[in-house]
Length: 545
Image 1 (cartoon, helix red, strand yellow):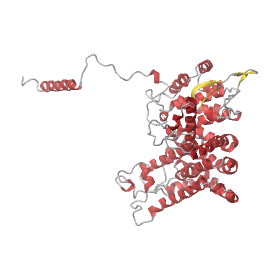
Image 2 (cartoon, rainbow, N blue to C red):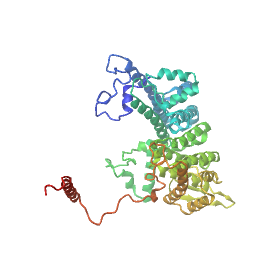
Image 3 (cartoon, rainbow, N blue to C red):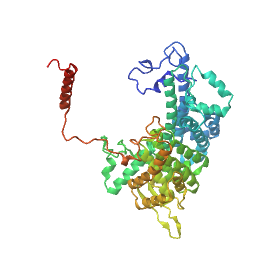
Image 4 (cartoon, one colour):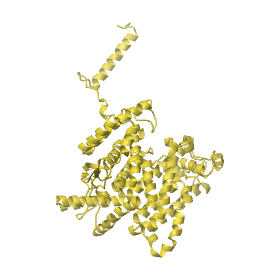
């Protein structure tokens, strides 16, 4: 089914000040050439109608979850039938990106937020397992042609149009279902009809990026990193601050950039807070811990697919998604860094991805390098040095003491079962992060120096500076082996010296020294006029003197 004129318009424009899809530069009549939805021809209308019909179904499922109808005992006997439809692997695989994005946003996210904690095993397991596994599969083959990890070329990411759909469909039909799906995800599943190539490629890029961002935003919401649950944690922090300072007025104070319109208690965002809100916040706070525990520690299928997908999302060239996934990674570390079965996944695979991103310095990561270095700090501290941090990998590192009965072990932190207060550490240190550092060319002596520096210096700034200085050595070697590609175009190319965070302290100041004699703009103009007069005289050979 082709995309609609409106979807084509939104692929390149975000506002309707110039008349929208029917205005100047609009896309009316671009999908079915010469016809738009104002015409008497029904053909250009079907795509929009079917798209909205599908979205309405997802919205109805979201309402069933939000109103808790789906959890009613009277519907328990038909719930397995519902699961067999909404989590059917064949249905999931056949959806276009634009439809799967709405499926995540309108149904899955709401389902996770609204399910009672006592029903996680019975109502979430059967749906989230297949969905998370499919998201990993879909995102991998969506981004592989972009980052060069597949045999497909960039041509494969161009959507099907009226001119080539039959030819490509015939080619794919003979290559098998798996090959067909890989090519299907590479182009976002889009058919663009008669749309021009530039707008068509923008539509595919928009579908690819929106899918990744919707997934990261949904996981942030259920881990209380944004949205309503994050507001609950902000209110809790505000109450603790008021109690610590013995200042009840803090409870009625909103953010400084917002004028409070009420004299009573307010939320951290400045909105009014009632007694009902207090009771609801208490329920949400209990579910925050339980849902995080369920997703990461209670079901191997869900936890494995979720964590691996987040690790892979760090490497996809979209700064928005990457920055949000760094926040999710910190919550994962706070929750499971102390669990032995996560050691290889976190200590080697996740640590390797983070380190290589910093060392390779891709252009698309400019501006978020400190977030990635903070992940490296969080992993190395928890798994190697026996240090844990405040939520989000912030603040001073808290060093745990060695076990008095076994010097090879650390004492576990007192908040190991409270990820919202910092979480725990791996009591038996692992050498997996050190192996990753040695693989990128860091010497054994440099690693020993790193351990000593991170143990002696506990502040976030000092530790991140130490890690940056160490990784600069590997980055310089990598740049030499790559032939110094800095400064070329392309998001995947290495950032130039003027953009690199690792070489920030080595750059020369770009502001030139002021001249001894001050020259104003008017003085420069007079000098230019005099020079012009001299040139005229010289041109005529001085015959008018």
